[in-house]
Length: 196
Image (cartoon, rainbow, N blue to C red):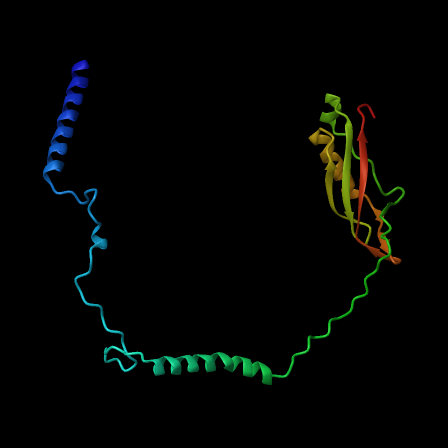
């Protein structure tokens, strides 16, 4: 086995020496201190500036030509200003005025006999798990919860789940504003004690 390792190392060194000697005899692409190929001065004459007629003749710019071009540029830039001056002013469209009520919202109230207690999960009861879940419910204008979630956990996922399921079955007198039913939010604590 050692002979195979020594033979592999010797072959690698021989290959390295062969490549190194060949690379020294071939010209290099870049040598430090030389200017890169793209920095060498050009050996060609620049192309003439094309004219509008496509002849390729060079254009001689005289002070008169420069002044004429400057006047034309100034006239082109003034055209939009003149159009804006002659256009009639546009009045903003009238916005529909929606009266904003500043009266407070009366929160939803649970209906008596319509808020069933949650079922204590059997697994949580066997484990002796207890705690209080804060349930947040969004109550629609019809008094039915549209969204129920856990606002504060009890520490037991079984108790949290049971509280949310009970919250979906609750019914409320909806929140009101200016005597009209509106959507409201209510937070209800649900306590679980083993043996109850």
